[in-house]
Length: 179
Image (tube, rainbow, N blue to C red; front, side, top):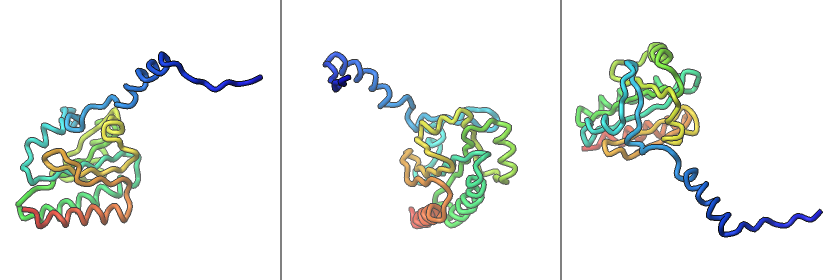
């Protein structure tokens, strides 16, 4: 039996191209329109929240999960570094810290915010459908994004490593001279 190579006709190529267009562009909305839910089950839209920031403010998004052990270790470190950076900013700008539980429900988010001793100034949010995996192209947890008020990603780290923590800490120190 002899196999002939497949040479698609122009008609077949057009059909294949039409099938591939939706796959290549994705079905996600822009990052600015991305929504999470707070522990009161209220919808929080990222772009709306960033409009309330001053032009100098920074937002740290920590994507975490209740079953992720490195996440549980990373959150207190990020919280401490954020608090230190806010103290050293002397009120010239504010760094806000959001912990987003990906794939967890509201009850689990509440439970783990207590276990992790998240402070009042840390916003606890839920992504119950794990939409952030496709929306922000998260490969795994933990993932940290640092955004400015213009929705620009200033820093992205994935995983909880010494290098990633050092990069994050150095980034925060670089903000100290910011006017």
